[in-house]
Image (cartoon, rainbow, N blue to C red; front, side, top):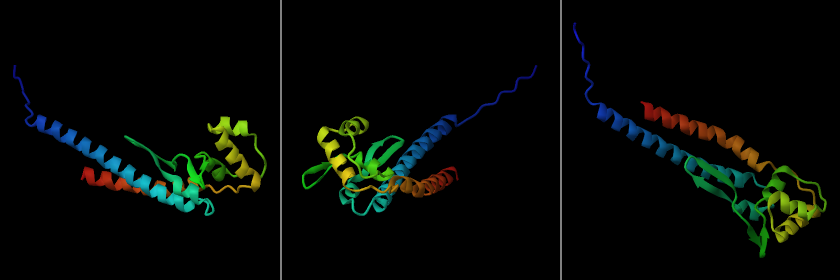
Length: 159
C-alpha cells in the first residue's frame, strides 16, 4: 500500500497574514465610519432649519463605539440661559401645528424635565413648525458616500 503525504509549509505565516488583514479591515472600516459621521454632521447642520442656530450648532457625533456612530443633537444647549431639549429636533423633523401641547405628554414621550417640556411647549404654541426632514435628507445623501468609501477600501484590501 502506498501512502501519500502532503505537507503544507508556511501555514503559520498564512494565519498571521490573515489576522493582520483582519485588523487592517476593522481599522479601515472604523476610519470610514468616523469620516462618514463627520460628513453626516456637516450635511445635517446644512439641512437644519436656518432659524434654528442653537439646534444646528448642537448637531454632532453623539455616540462612537466600535462599528457604530450616531449623529444628532448632542444634549441640551442654551439660548440666553434657557436649555433647548435635544429631542426638540424630532419636532422640527416631523413638524407640528401651532397649539399648546400637554406638557406631561411631552415630558413622558421625550424623557424631558418639566422645564424642558415647558420650553418645548412654548415653542410649539407660538407658530406652526414646518417639517424640515433635515435628518432624513442627511442620511439619504450620506448613504452613497459611505457605500463608495467601503467599496473602494475593500477593493484596495483584496488586490
